[in-house]
Length: 389
Ligand SMILES: Nc1ncnc2c1ncn2[C@@H]1O[C@H](COP(=O)(O)OP(=O)(O)OP(=O)(O)O)[C@@H](O)[C@H]1O
Ligand SMILES: [Mg+2]
Image (cartoon, rainbow, N blue to C red; front, side, top):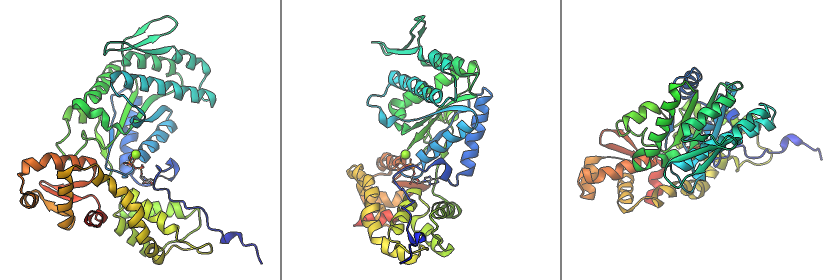
């Protein structure tokens, strides 16, 4: 028998559970341009931060990773972390996290020989001690010069870095917790950035997550929106969906027709997670010698996809919803996936203003989308079937 290596099927290139590698990132051109522009402004010493918002699986983490790599290409020191990693979040722990992650990042750069170890020793002197009061206290070891607040600690950090870097960029994922207590921590970050701006210190903060400061028009608190103007991520356009599919299939030498891609985009509505999961399931139906992914692979995938993959993803919307929210979701589903507030109010026999907070929460969670004033739809039409079964 001939040993035909080309008949070997490559491992599944679709990975719905993980953020995309920046080199495989597709689309979002305008949003990325927005980030580049903010980065340039930051490097020139202006206060130019932003926020990244959107529902579950829309690509927020992937976007933050992409921004991180763009910032690095542009000579900035960029630091990504997720607030999920933190048990207790308040001004002190947040300040500590920022400084510690900055120190770790510099340490990494030193190991990679990208910056001199002298800088690290300077930075390491910034020590944070949590005082018994609510005030953040940051102390410098050696000269025991106090850093009474985050902005002076960052100022000192920048003093160490400015010869090597053009800016410091913090990308903070799962940042919704910052909005608790009337967005206290967002206000805190804004105050820190404003302090730094006085001395033109190029530091940028990009919180990402299911944020309300960037919620449906008008729901955000405007002074915050001004400091962190949001980029709101939405479903891929058909062009973006196709670019995504091609980028993944080309290296593994599997072809796909335009017609099939159009169908896939239609079924998934270009929702990045749903698209990636659908592609992953269909890919898993390919046989060793096959070179093209066709409609039949998607047909074979359908049951698996809906029963297992999607139900796992959709479950969160129902699981985390309270009784009223569940009733709302069910009514929208029964209505074909879309409803007006007036209809909903009749069906549930509740006043509109009674329903509003639930609708706002569901919108923020990404389960529903407000299409017009007083008109809502489920974020994905496949969610209709899921809710009804
Ligand atoms: N711009 C993009 N290019 C290619 N793939 C993407 C892009 N954005 C998202 N994806 C894919 O979509 C899926 C979801 O992306 P990601 O994890 O970044 O979303 P998220 O909004 O952070 O999700 P969560 O709400 O769960 O935190 C991943 O499989 C990722 O690979
Ligand atoms: Mg994420």
